[in-house]
Image (tube, rainbow, N blue to C red; front, top):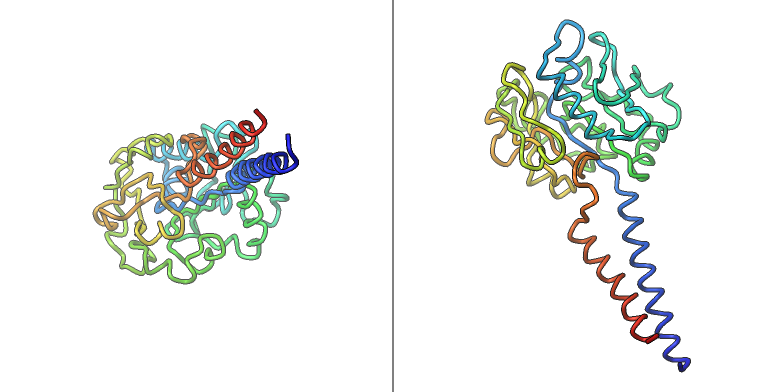
Length: 275
């Protein structure tokens, strides 16, 4: 084999290796953020407000973000109505983030709404760098009653414009019906382990998210279509930047498939040259 052929073969191998490693690294470092337009977990499963439909949803949500990971889910902001429990995944509750220790010890971070209802909390303030590092390592966070506030811009990336694309309690698009049970689980929601909540919950949704806007920030997974009073068509009540653990998370996105194809092509080229 000539020196030129060896050089080309080596270059092809290096290209294939770089592209394939780049694909794997990209997948490993892709954290997931879930915007939840509901306080069903923090308000309707605790204290004086227990509801069987909310308990079912709670366990589905914790299964979705925790899966079979033995590490507990950190539930932050707990205690207002007697504390959150779980029937599907180990959880550890915290009033705030000061005593949590390294975030790597948790399978997911779930931020309860302020006071249990109906606007997102700000317990993350002062811990932004830790949360970004957690997301960068592939972690999952879920924010109850997210209203698009600037306090979450560091992670969600709205640059101060998020609130103007949220309808419902605290939303810049108006209050909507403020409290609605008309949300509907989507096919993708079913694939990620959710089922349609029973109507007897009485008040599942408080916010709806403009999917056209949030899709530009990478939030392309809609698990619940918003209730008519929360924007209806084009709005989501449970919007995610990635699949959950119970979803088909191993199916690559189209861009990842292209990258993987290029990597394999490089290896194939190298084998042909060697032959």
